[in-house]
Length: 272
Image: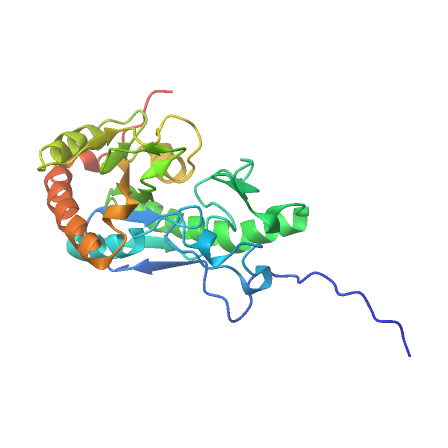
């Protein structure tokens, strides 16, 4: 009997049964607006299992942005704009992190260890980058830069949701607007959100658009001089369809008002 041959690592990460790395809802949208979510899905490549995590962990915010896919699809339809959505969990690779960021493939998230992300080889990392991260961002680049080339200057909006409690702190905000230097979209958006009844609105809360961690808005909006904003909605408010529908109505009327400003559809490079 011949000795058993060692099993080599697969040359690809994603198999035929795995979903595509991203999808686009309402791609035919005609508005001068492109929306996306880097943490919309919580799929795992079959070859990775669940990275050693159980169902309880995978239902939490560490795996995905709860409720944002449903909200984004509703907004895409009502605003007549495309909405790009990642399929894979941020625990496989975080599409809103630079590839050289230590949290790009997190070994721990909110004090939860991720066993399947420890001891990865360079090839392990490369497969996740090439098969999940890059196709998504290349598609976003093609969509946005194609519109710019056709002189259909879009506003870029990144959609996220945040956990109500972090490090035992109960976050009071219902919605937050994250931004850095370009105030064209965020300032009127903050002002308009504050006019909505009973909303607690965070200016660069619960995170900051100035902390240097985010990747996507920088790559697809700031670098191109496009007006933009990152919206964070608290997860408990959009965890079910009723909440998603309610917030889609709120954000539709707010965004329709703000997006009517023609100055948002001009290329303006921010000062370094």
